[in-house]
Image (cartoon, rainbow, N blue to C red; front, top):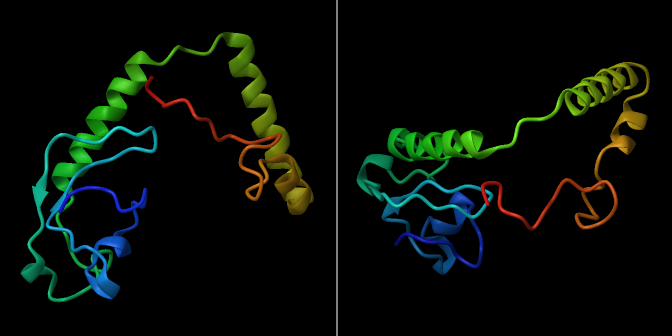
Length: 130
């Protein structure tokens, strides 16, 4: 079985326990929605009954596909203009200094993890490479 269970990409969703499907192959995937075309067979006997995330599974193929996808994304990305790049450097420096002095204040400067659609959120509905 290759695919996603109810939008879930966690290894534990494919381990065959609790009537969950049991993965037979691996495929690379990205948060942008991209899924690699190649499937890499998963030798369940080689895992020795371990959970997938604990087993020594060869991820060379899926990782190579994902890195190739990221390379294409980087090529398509629009470079930041100098003013934007300088602003990001300044914000990073300010957050680094604030973190040293007041870690909780630095946390407040970031997105609210409980409000993924609200102000300060880094989450977007646009794909990373669209």
